[in-house]
Length: 320
Ligand SMILES: NC(=O)c1ccc[n+]([C@@H]2O[C@H](COP(=O)([O-])OP(=O)(O)OC[C@H]3O[C@@H](n4cnc5c(N)ncnc54)[C@H](O)[C@@H]3O)[C@@H](O)[C@H]2O)c1
Image (cartoon, rainbow, N blue to C red):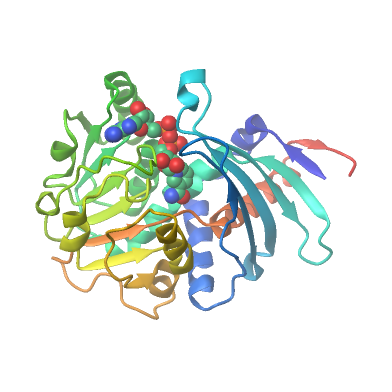
């Protein structure tokens, strides 16, 4: 089997455009009921931390496997990433493991791509301004993906509790995207008058939500990558549609104590991608789409990385 380290995967450098395309196809397939993906079980060794098992099979992409991923909010104190883990890709015909690969890059990129897919169906295409709350790994990849999906994007309002993190973000993302990146001093400034909002701070059970319903402008599209950590009850109540990438998973998290204030779930993102339910229906709807992160997103990306790595002779072949 092929072992792909973090550095190998960076070397493969699968373009964000291809990841967005693979996820769009996967969401359509999910909407049509063609994806096998049981809700993720997990273990919890520290408060607010998780290690999740995420298996999925996407037949149309010939991709099957599992991601074993950790999320540790206190890791920054040890100079370790919030998210770490491994992914095993299996041959769908024989079940034989084809590859073991690091999952940091994949998780970062596919989560950004999932926000872009949600924006494709639910954001105003005229959107010019995005508010990013949490200027870490996800703040970066979500902006990269939105920059590809939203042709008129011009301005980014970046907020982070760490001034240094915001400054580094602004410098890096300005260079990468040539968008106008403005650091703002409060969550409210990042949210008010923004057409699109991405929140990507830590996921905490006892979180301190800040975003009020009347901060959200008509026509807004919000992608809470950090679950409901940032959104107050009034914000959820003010939205016209609440969508998630997986209804079952969202209700499971609700049973664990997250998402206590969400309204009725309007649709799964897959139902919208497959055309079973409409996404945005007019320019003034306020829509929140909470992508919890699906194993399907990882498998859609991993198979492409594997094929490109084999083609380009990247990685180390190991005996099983
Ligand atoms: N939904 C998904 O599919 C998915 C996938 C991966 C990660 N996540 C979640 O995304 C979040 C960010 O992950 P990451 O890898 O980017 O982490 P990261 O550590 O790279 O970035 C987090 C950033 O948030 C900042 N921050 C902390 N508290 C804040 C607050 N109250 N307001 C604004 N900024 C704040 C930190 O200073 C840091 O810069 C985590 O909650 C993680 O669990 C979700």
